[in-house]
Amino acid sequence: MLESVLIILPKALWLILPAYVANSSAVLFGGGVPIDLRVKIRGKRILGDGKTYRGLILGTCCGVLVGIFQNQMAGLLGGVIFPPVVLLSLAFGALFGDITESLIKRRLGIKQGAPFFPFDQLDFIAGAFITLWLTSEEWFLTHFSLDVIITILIITPILHLLTNRIGYIIGKKDVPW
Ligand code: CTP
Ligand code: MG
Image (cartoon, protein in one colour):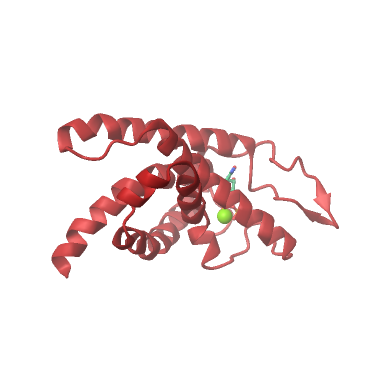
């Protein structure tokens, strides 16, 4: 049991890393013009100030760049190669999932920054998985085995709460969740 966890955990983290980096880079480098251009529907913002063009673009770029670096390392480690479309799907898909969650939160009347557990923690994972599945089904099914997916679903909320606390302390997030 412990042995298999020790094998699956690093594998799972390596595979989802471009999505993790995309999501956290959006928080680190985001800000500025909101994607919804402050448009409201029935008195409520479409997405809110927490979803910006800069976060989306820089987040996607950082996720893809990390994946390119991982591909360079794959030669050394004998690891997986992420094709370009896979990297784009993981990075952009993660942020697309996060945006979709904000859209739903606003329609439900949940204010920007207010918690919506566990969706705040898993929105970007769902976005990355679904996008990757749509663009690269075979690659997705080959690499994201059920044990890898379950590991990611368990470990992500824990990591997310931890990194958000750091983001709050360094002043990048308005709330510690
Ligand atoms: N961010 C951004 N652009 C994005 C995603 C995130 O600029 N596409 C930045 C914003 O500064 C945002 C922060 O990252 O406030 C944290 O993102 P998140 O926790 O997803 O948003 P919240 O501010 O909590 O808003 P929401 O209630 O819509 O989830
Ligand atoms: Mg979110």
